[in-house]
Amino acid sequence: MSGPRFRAFAKSALVASLLVLAGCATPAPYAPMTPGQATGYTDRQLSDNRWRVTFTGNSVTPREMVENSLLQRAAEVTLASGHSHFVFDTRDTKAQTRYDAFPVGPPAFAYGPGFGYGYGRGYWGFHPAWGYSPFSPDVEIVSSTKYESYAEIVVLNEEQARNEPRAVDARAVIAHMPPPPAPPPPRV
Figure: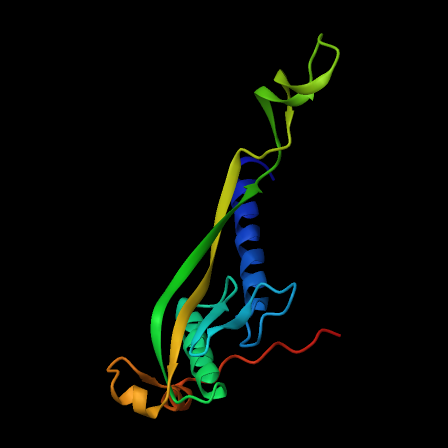
């Protein structure tokens, strides 16, 4: 198998393997972010009535799920602090996109600059040379995006909430949110 047929086969195999890997991946669980983890929620009290709350998903966690998890955590923090309502002071969601290049097809012989033996020069290194290139002429670019949502919230009691039209009822948020995804089972 060579030439265009090999490239088509290699491309199909790459796409199939990426689909299998994506099927194994699960959205980030709704859980606290612990040291060494890249996903989950954090919260930090900034003053008596102000908190910073974040939720970071992985590359298969949809943006809406990340934002819902942030809202859920803001409501939980509000109730845990002894308050009933909160107001978003600042809120945003950042997208971080990563691009990976995968060679498709066999390595090729190449001409031009590259790492290799410099004929007649007596050393190895980066310089113009004829030779073998370990890089495929065809490259498949795969992108993945992960989202991080963050907010600063101001927690309010019932009386303060009556005077604030932007106040969000924490109990209502928890009652109406879909259940967060469960953590994956431990690997054995």
